Image: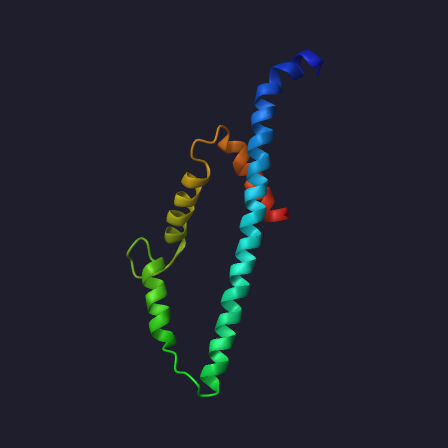
Length: 117
């Protein structure tokens, strides 16, 4: 490959680099936020369950589960499954790549950031 052919690729590489960079940063952030949310939910659950087991409070876990499932069930079929996840994923992807010049580079960077970040 000669320098002349690299000059032809320059616009594409700059877009890929920008898209990949912001994608990687977004994937890295999503992974960290996900871990923090999981930690917070776990701490809250253990705290509440400790209070329940010592008799300080009563928690209707069945009602909480049913309410959570209703709000997460986007397809209305009464269960949370891969179809619901696809709906959430499409909404997220539409928001994340809206007016982004290179969504392909973003996608690659995002997946790399989630996996290796």
